[in-house]
Length: 593
Image 1 (tube, rainbow, N blue to C red):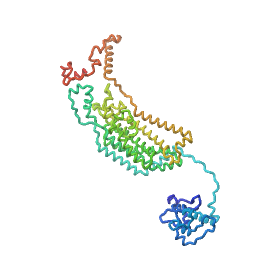
Image 2 (tube, rainbow, N blue to C red):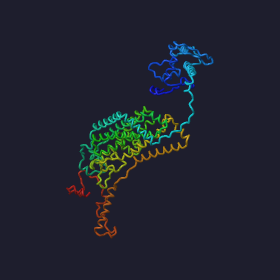
Image 3 (cartoon, helix red, strand yellow):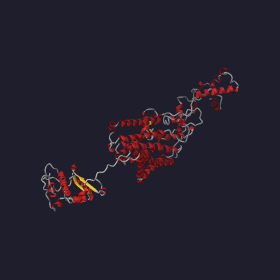
Image 4 (tube, rainbow, N blue to C red):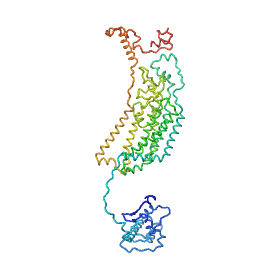
């Protein structure tokens, strides 16, 4: 039944009983007087529309006190089912509407009241003059209006965008409160974490003899001690601020659908383009969240003072927010609105923590192990690429002597042999160029993050058309496929697009990038140098016209430069090779090697 302010707008009113029998038909404002004339009384505080509907259903009866003060007339038509006056109604059903046995057993109390109302209306209508009856005549036949042209997609998209902007403007205070909560969370986490700790006071206690005579067995332990001062973990801060931001942003973004879910179903049922609505929601949710995230990233960078570029903060915060909003727009499509907040918060917190790569037993070493963990981490954890990008960018800005990076001037250096690949960290295993010293940041995970968000949003598009179709007054998908073969082809094409997006995105985060340097190894490097020296010797001695076989082999002339002699044997502590026993200058030893 309509609300009072809507009912007051009615010009005409038709009340029908069971079977389509008329209880009242006429001006809306005249209904009250008509039923008061039948001894009905409107209880104080009750809505007029509710009262009229209850009367039409036979749920209430005329007031017996009013009926007792009036003369009762008896219907002389014995062929009718029953002729009941207001007084007889009161006697039949009692003051409280409970049957007292005087009504016929085959007629219930409500049926008796409705039958009496039908008769009363017929008597009232028969008593009208011709002029009064003219308003009930059937109007002249007119042509059925043609179907209106639907708005085009972009026209509906523009309308939806304007409406969402208007709703956001009206809820500006709530948006500001949400932004303030994000800012406060970022400030607290940044202040508690403090400035990044890049190195620590750690002086390795390694004997000189051990340091200069290590072999393949002792080398890993020695190297670990040498670079332990720089082996600091930069994962705690990205994990904390990433996880809190993801949960808060996700809950805020989901409200744009959960708060208007009923309106969405209603408009879709009315013929509006649901695709235009979903696209408008995606655009506005992304824009609103991006503004909030830029502010949060700016404040976090100011308080954190990162070693790398501030662009790292903006890029990775925005990329993470893109994925968070994508999931936040998917969940309302597949579950009731009242459950979205709980499930979404648990999803971000659980997978964002467990599969982030920063919490044992699933570290980046296991993520890059090539099994299912890498895929689960990439798709389900919104903090996985965010955390790795933030941490690797900080370490990439450390100098070469820290053990993390390699300078661009280094020649024939195996860039994969740095702390980046150390089992404790295992950052950037698919990017061999990540160890190159660069304070501009590391952005390898941005592109996979973007396409994960696109895939999840496309999945939300499919879910919108596959779930809750009954609420959109649409038949199930299988029914549509059976009815129209073209629908089945469309479904297959949409699923193929989804598979293609998943495959391409998976390739993005599993492919190994090409190294922009060539590591040839020490033996090949020495061999190449000897060949180059041989060429220069031929040119110097004017032997370019001689065959190579006629020129003495440099390897034979200097056996010490043979690549087979480059291996170092473990020496007893305190002993040196005989040829260096009388060489006090350490530079001689270094130069010969």
